Amino acid sequence: MSAVPDPVDGLGDGSDEALQRAHAALLSNKPEPTEGYPVMPLFLLGLLSSLVFVGSIYFLHFRGGLSALVYDERFDPNTASKSAVVAQVDPVAAGKRLYNQPGACVTCHQANGMGIPGAFPPLVGSEWVLGSEERLIRIVLHGLAGEIKVKGVVYNSVMPAFGEGGGFNWNDERVANVLSYIRHEWGNSASLVDKAKVTEIRTQAAAGRNKAWTAAELEAIP
Ligand code: HEC
Image (cartoon, rainbow, N blue to C red; front, side, top):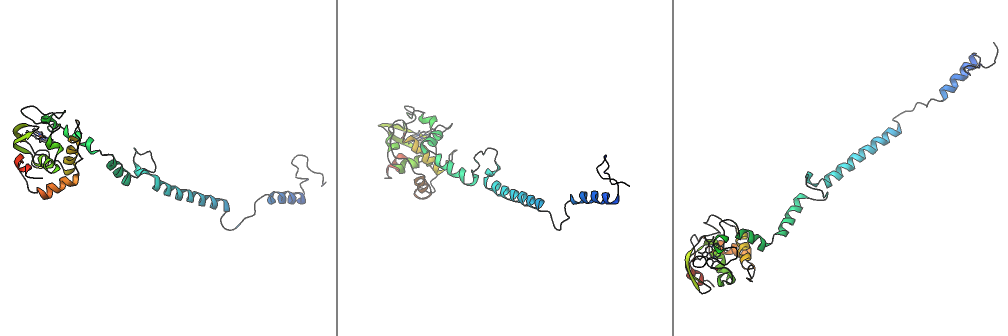
């Protein structure tokens, strides 16, 4: 046979040598077989695992209580809600809402605090509103009955209890707020009433009281 290369497939003349050369060339292109795991997939697995790990930690920190209303990712419903609400309560504004509740003070003393001549005494400029907290708190906690003089005019009727025994049963904070309101509205200007003072009178000084006060009883209290 001649050694002239085959012009069609380039493998030579088909001799054994030519075949061996052609196979050797093909084999040398294949990667050498290795032991153990290939490096690249291991690296990717590690990268993915660490992404999942870091992602979980991020999620736990910034999940915002999983609330649909939360758009601040640092919002923590356990601490945020309480402090925000407490800081916003204005006793005078809260007291105004209580004063104007249906059936509450507004019904008798009116929105302008002037009362109704001959029936309900005024709160504007009243010595009872601007004077002793001790008396004022008792009036709203337990009610008032009998003769009372307000700004020189005598009234003789009944005011219901708001702290206990009446239909309202307001807690100490509400009583303090409504009194703070009437001491600050319509040009009235006296100190705010402290919730702790209401608590003290309800649970100590006037503990067990279950009927309306009379003006005479209140006047005996400084
Ligand atoms: C059902 C009508 C009625 C309601 C409701 C009512 N009062 Fe009175 N209030 C009276 C009457 C009547 C007197 C006078 C009582 C008397 O004659 O002994 C009075 C007296 C007072 C006095 C002392 C006198 C004065 O004018 O300063 C104050 C203070 C007072 N009320 C505040 C309030 C507050 C605050 C509320 C709401 C928490 C309220 N009252 C709800 C009828 C009412």
